[in-house]
Image 1 (tube, rainbow, N blue to C red):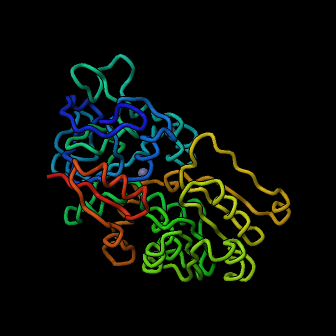
Image 2: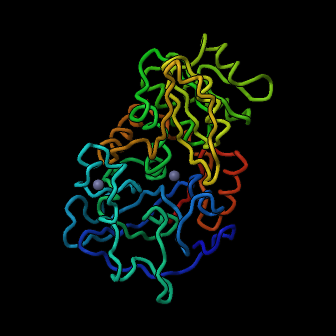
Length: 357
Ligand SMILES: [Zn+2]
Ligand SMILES: [Zn+2]
């Protein structure tokens, strides 16, 4: 449980309600530790408190509500925060990740809370709350996966892999033969690199201040690497790519990196902001670059349709074409979560995964 900005995570025993007609109760098996959890705890992503964090989980269905048809007890599932109503304009346009009525997947005001402590309602981070042995979520938040897949590996698809691979394949639509730059090579950046590789990019330039992450980036498919500090990064990218890249991704979420993405583009290139830029920052760009039709866009949760894509990504994993095993740097227990968050902040890990018994 997380009670105040800057405070620690405490481990407490809370009450989990019975599933409502469209809800699913899971026994959590694994949950990845993501930067958005950290952003939330530091206050750079706003949200109500007290909250149970965690939003990259996989587990086994324990109980389902009376209207649930897509899963049943015993099913192995991934949960994802991109739940959707199915009827709003964005859903109808085929963009459920931009659903404007996700209240559809939440309990209405006046109904008892899903989670509580001594009668005090608790919020669910990302409407999931994955740092817990038991989860209670809307049916639309889960997707069934094959029973024989390792759930720790599968959990990464719930956020980081979907966010990164989807940014390359769905948001940017990276094209075969293109050149790509990726700023930041943690879990999301490594996933962008893998997505660009799957799309057939000819050149993938990885940029990170941590040398070991550049080695990891090469493993995942980067063809060139740049460690900032030696030379101007934009100039280095332009030199390597022969004048600029077709696609550039800010996988960190930092206005300076976003600007470098934009400046490193070739004409008609696309800069994609994948990481969460802390609230309050302002992005400045020299508008002259628009004369060569450079573009810039946000990307949220990899523009996913996760009920379709999560099983596809796991099939690519099974075929050896999407390397998820190497993305797990550490497996930890729930009471080690603060250490896992600190290691992520220090840039020491690609992904830590909390394992539950
Ligand atoms: Zn996340
Ligand atoms: Zn919708």
